[in-house]
Image (cartoon, rainbow, N blue to C red; front, side, top):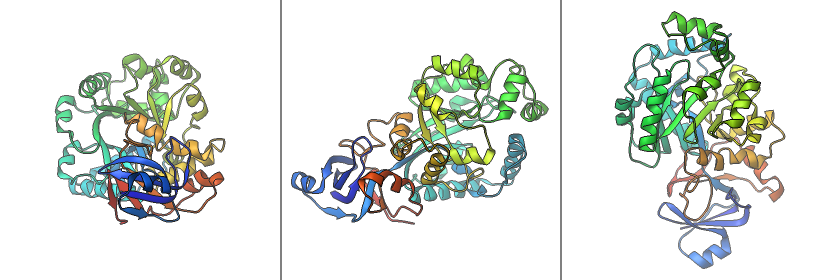
Length: 400
């Protein structure tokens, strides 16, 4: 099959006007100008017309469990108040509610051009009750041991071992997951080639808790019985880097609240991957994300949507626009790399996802437009509708 489009944007190379992609099965076999591809490859031609074809987007951090909570929780006075609010909402939900929420999240993500996502779920036991995901999915089992012990081995055994994606283990955050839980998860994940991900340095209250042994989060967790002897000495980042071997297998969400001493640590640390969630970040009014500093230190940074308990949609287009609003010095191409090339690297698939190249997975999307080459990348970010043409693993999806 040959798919022709006004522009093909490979991401790892320069855009191709009147471009085409040749596909056999679920793999890309050739990329170039349409006349050249047709002469070399032959076969059925699908002409997308005046559209821009690019790699499917990769959402590096989301929580589809909470798709049904869109707009249900207003911004709170404190991050701890938000935690209490979402816990109250969750207590009223059934397993069927969560299954419907995850299914709705997949549909919405697909409609916005996401072909791959890292989905953290608090209910890994429900995965087996879901149909095969319509998207390439890395399932992350989110684990908390504040109130009861967690058997990481048993959770790992429930995770899906086949399909087009993968699985991982996700100690929730250092304030809800013990150092031993982090260590157990890391040992199992490394032994089985799984992803590791966590939330870290997300809020001012997390900083207050670990560094100062004070604040609303400290008081709340102490009141429900969490041992607090790990607080009052260092920042959350310092605590995790001191107690864990954090390396390139880790995908760290947020890093919103960092001190000068944290940046000294990061300069010497092994380079893990970072996920920034711009609209959720704005919802909570966190400190400005230190994008320039983290990039300069060599960290691979990608984007995620977080959950709809703190966001309005699962659109990575909207996340890219929000990032450009805050960081106008970034080029549009650099922003799109954060949901393609950088995100593929973060999940360990830089040789098969995030670009349009021979040998890569046939994960493609197309958006309408007849821009000049000069404003091509800007026009992609500015696209605000549903994606009307999409291919995942060589299969074309009809719009929903």
